[in-house]
Length: 149
Image 1 (tube, rainbow, N blue to C red):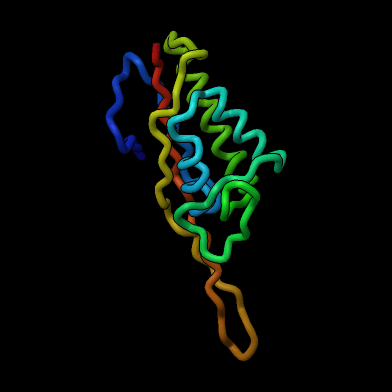
Image 2: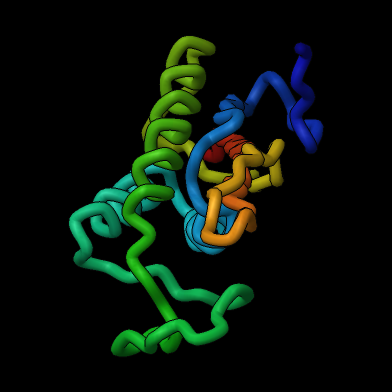
């Protein structure tokens, strides 16, 4: 299957990478990508590594119902599993930029988006002949890096 990128970026100054059908939380991934969008590549990688080590929480701006507050940011969490998946895609984008001959020290995250993928549908049998749906939403992640002066 041929995948498309959701935005058109200048191929001379940008590098892109995508992770398809990732088994991570869609809502956590959306909040994580909102946090790294607009950062320098090194800052974004440091932020993701801090989230994985549970040193820095991610502020939850959209999906923040019943989310506990963290000091200084309000509602927030440590989405470790999503951070590991996004970090892999970010490293892939960095490798693509290096392959294209872009200067890795001058890269910025200009595009970071999460899209819903297919659902894995299964059912858990319950008592008295009933069944409970046990669905899992897969996620597509897109990251675009741009070289700036």
